[in-house]
Amino acid sequence: MLSKSQARTFFLGGTVITFAIFLGLSWNSLSNAVPKQTHEENLTDQVVRGKHLWESNNCMGCHTIFGEGAYYAPELTKVIDRRGEPFVKAVLTSKAPWAPNGRKMVAYGFSENDADDLVAFFKWIGEVDLNGFPPEPDLKQ
Amino acid sequence: MKYKSQQVAYWFFALSMLLLALQIVYGFIMGFAHMGYDGLHDIFPFNTCRAVHTNLLVVWILSGFMGAAYYIIPEEAENELVNVKLAYIQLITLALVGVAAIIGYHFNYWEGRKFLEIPRPLDYLVVLNVLTFLGLILATLYKGKKRTTTSLVLTMGLVFAALLYLPGMIWFDNQTMDSFFRWWVVHLWVEGVWELIMGGILAFLLIKITGVDREVIEKWLYVIVGLTFISGILGTGHHYYYIGVDKTWLIVGGIFSALEPLAFLGMALFAVAMYRKGEKKHPNKTALNWTLGTAIVSFVGAGLLGLAHTLPQVNMYTHGTLVTAMHGHLAFWGAYGMIVFAIISYTMPNMTGRKLFNTNTGMLAFWLSNIGMLGMTVAFGVAGVAQVYLERKVGIEFGLVQKEIQVHFFILVCCATLFTSGITLYIYEFIKYGRPSNEALVD
Ligand code: HEM
Ligand code: HEM
Ligand SMILES: [Fe+2]
Figure 1 (cartoon, each protein chain N blue to C red):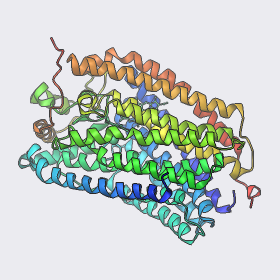
Figure 2 (tube, protein in one colour; figure 1 turned 30 degrees about the horizontal axis):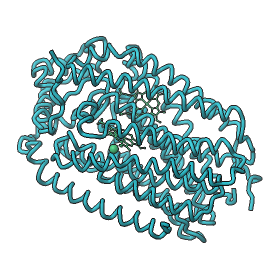
Figure 3 (cartoon, protein in one colour; figure 1 turned 135 degrees about the vertical axis):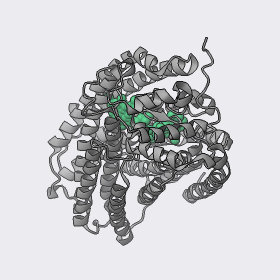
């Protein structure tokens, strides 16, 4: 039968080995895959400002991006493809509450500049290679 | 209770119950908003409620873990806590930082990174607070007479949890990097080090309640936490499928995360086996219920419902939908909510000297909250599956789909009411126990 010290070796050994593999794979992803898949060369100051606005207003508290966030409002990874830039800018700058299908968004009333920054962020996000996400609706007629 | 300083635990549990009650209020606001009744939108917009709901959840559970440690470590180490006053200061500052963060969320003061919304300046205060806590625990353990496996596993979990908070505080310009390291906190907490904390508390409870030999229990504890790390560390890959990193993670994350339920299965089998092997003489049946309950419900909520959407082929469609919320609720409740309830139910009679073990209120609280939470899980699940089908398969627009599934949120709110009535009874009993008393000290 398994003894307590064997069980401890299983725990410690397993942890060290899997953690080492995890660090190796992470290193590989961050140094090789991320720059390519995210097109890091396009990560301009404007995009970074957009990311900052995205965070400081907690947009992720209602929406998802890369499928991460909340489930109250639409996925925004491909929003520029789906709606086009003028539509997105109109929503962001509007001072009147925007409530499609009766569900309200906070009326941020962003300035032109801020809205441009956010649009740049969305464009950059939309181009990241996400291994096929979001999926094409395959039952669409 | 053997050591007077164990009484500190009571106040951490009280804070925990208070924050849970508040968490539920914000949950209801969101449930109604999903149903179409967002009348509170101007004062409490959804993103505020969500940040408050999930952050209160994390803080009440951490407060419960801290209380558990303050109770368990002196008893296992056979030594009073080294500095009781500092423990109270730590409690009060924890509450203050928590309240400051929650108030900030109502005034657009936050960092919109899911689960890590606390702004950076407050993060440093959290770190300071946790260091104080760990200092007290480690010093007590160091000065104690014994260092048992149970106390070591519990402490290891707490120390790693603190360390893993740090990667979440690094600033990145690249959203993919940001997300990559956010999971080092969120995933490696709930599917890694928190399981050590849960395992440690569970082992302590089983030793006390079943009377089975410590050596046997602690041997299996090592096996369980071994399974946890072996599957859970590489299982982080199930969050890396679709965020802009290489496809290696589809394979590694898929395989290892599919093994994660084994640790939870281990926990369930372990608890049930020890109970059957034991003497069944311990009078505190309420604590026994919660102890077996947490082991079983965590297997269902985290293990089975996690497995349901962890393979990349499935996750491609369910990723970031209400299916995730279904799993999130039962997993958090079963694994971490219920383990906190178990340790509270076990310790209250020992700390206060009042033996309210087997009351009807206690039983009712257990069943109502669990049946309510199970119902909520089903409601989220049905809404989630319908959403996935209509939105991701058929391609109907988000907003129209949401209208279609509103009715499931009516069911959600009904079940949430059942859940809340169970929690109310539990808190009522908690209050009835009264304060800890020196007369409860035994040798
Ligand atoms: C007690 C343990 C667990 C807790 C508390 C928990 C909780 C959560 C939460 C809150 C999320 C949402 C995270 C976010 O989007 O930020 C999540 C996501 C996820 N969990 Fe768990 N979980 C646990 C265990 C597991 C296990 C054992 C598995 C797999 C077998 C699993 C599989 C998943 C998957 C695949 C996702 C991603 C869903 C998506 O793509 O949207 N979880 N979990
Ligand atoms: C009465 C009770 C509750 C109600 C009505 C409720 C409702 C909700 C709603 C509507 C959401 C947001 C979903 C979205 O983004 O659209 C949410 C998120 C969440 N709640 Fe609750 N909740 C309740 C209690 C709880 C409890 C007791 C727990 C934990 C033990 C919990 C854990 C969570 C978690 C982890 C999330 C984030 C899920 C994710 O991101 O996938 N909730 N809740
Ligand atoms: Fe995970």
